[in-house]
Image (cartoon, rainbow, N blue to C red; front, side):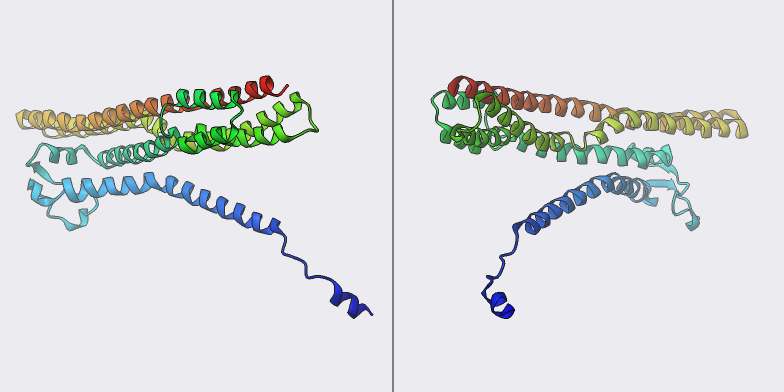
Length: 299
């Protein structure tokens, strides 16, 4: 009898919850992999900066007196640079770190520019919000959602999430107007919480390098000055004075690299934060538009 009962029981369909968990886990793994790549990018840039300094600028063919000792492979003591840029090699071991910092700034500037450009979407944000507001006043929800699909930015994504909840609340007959508005606000807040971290991600690298690059440049200059004055004290005479002036000019390359890198980082950081503020204002404006429209049209 029990066997008949077991046979009569329908086969249970697989529950959707594990699938959702798999999708969530895959999304978390993808986010972790992106964070790992972003964290390793400065290290790769510093390694590339060392290769540019050692292999490019520090090539023996760029000097009249190359270091003959092969044991000095990491930092050969070349002398007599032939070109202006080759003199940067004699700025010392801080130079490749500064080159790496500059490459890191360029890397994250390109990455942030692409991300924020996508988040900005197409067209003017204020014009888009006004267009959606007109559709809402005319109770044309499908046209408003279509406008969000056309906008293709963070403001459009947040507005679309809010509009879906807006449409759901219009059809809801159990809640009062105030409760429906609260549901719309909660949906907008959740959508905003998903969009904003993506906009602000990796800006910390630009702000950090903006502060550190100048200090690294000054450190390289001080180290170069110490070497130059030590040589002056050891040798003495006119030849040492000439080497001192040459050493000072070479040490100042560190300052130039540090200040230049810091300037680019500060400028681009301010550019990106300004664009992010504009997107954030558009998100706030879209949320206010949705709640006010629902409160006035569906009392």
